[in-house]
Amino acid sequence: MWSGFPLFPEQASTMAGRVDALYIALLCVTAFFSVLIACLVVGFAIRYRRRSPDEIGTPIHGNLTLEVVWTLVPLAIVFVVFLWGAEIFFSMARVPPQAMEVYVVGKRWMWKAQHMSGQREINELHVPVGIPVKLTLTSEDVIHSFYVPAFRIKKDAVPGRYATLWFQATRPGRYHLFCAEYCGTKHSGMIGWVEVMEPAAFQSWLTGGGSGSLAAEGQKIFQSLGCVSCHRADAQGRGPRLEGLFGRPVILASGEQVVADADYIRESIVTPAAKVVSGYQPVMPTYQGLVSEEGLMQLIAYIQSLEEPAARGVPIAAAPAGAAAPAGARQP
Ligand code: CUA
Image (cartoon, rainbow, N blue to C red; front, side, top):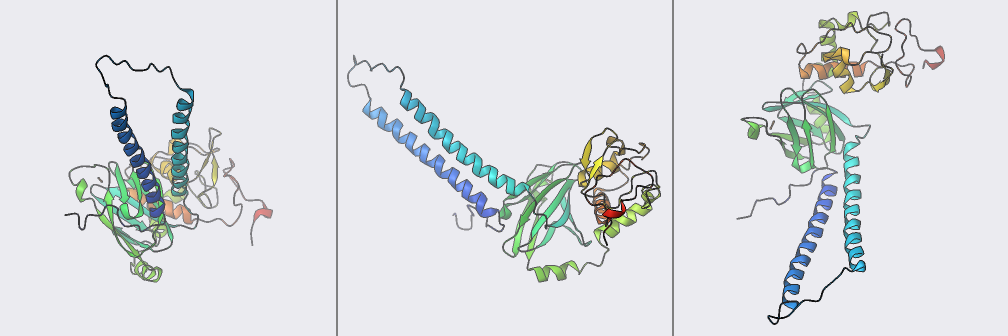
């Protein structure tokens, strides 16, 4: 009856073994105390049973040693579980810097993935084995949840914001991808596959596409929407220049400093008035509804690709005009 019923999904990522170890440890602690308490209940019931109708129990007025022990022992166990869990949580939350990036959009009822090279796929995700992969995740409509049991990863795809998660597959193969958040009639059909390939096979799969890279697609949108008329490379435009912006701190009109990550750029496109760069007027119209979620990701990839060789690490300053980097900061 139980043949073919997997008690555990297979382990196919670097995180899987660690998550399972914690899970099994929790299971063992729970089982140990369940059995212990059940045995004590039965044992005490027999040992301290009423032997005659007029028997009166000994009054007990507390036992300090006992109370200290049954407070400290669970506290120690809970601390171990907390530290262990936190350690795994932090490694899941910290994306390795050399990770390969893929953009994923959830939509009723499918998963759409875009690779940086321009390859696009639906309900499939091809990744190389042994290389960390970072997913930037959002939704076009309602909340979905990206869940790959074999990798022990799950993250909600929430409309209007980006979530990131990462994994490193350890074995080539095909692994189930599920939507783990009820999202409508065909929620149960919102499934796909993660195809883990040998790096060489993955490279040849990547080059099999033919469409332009994600950044090149983003550039097309950038030009067709006329973004370039304000965001000029010579810093003479009405909007801040975007070269070298990605991942760097930006000073806002409010004096606040934020990092120009994917979320910031997305927000600046759909609700430009939310965060205005210091020294600029809030003149940019909203592009909400004019660019699809996939288009936004392409635009972000384009802005990410706009490298500036000079002045790395210097905040985008308030000077809108002629904000040339100091000569000393320029690299050969
Ligand atoms: Cu998408 Cu459930």
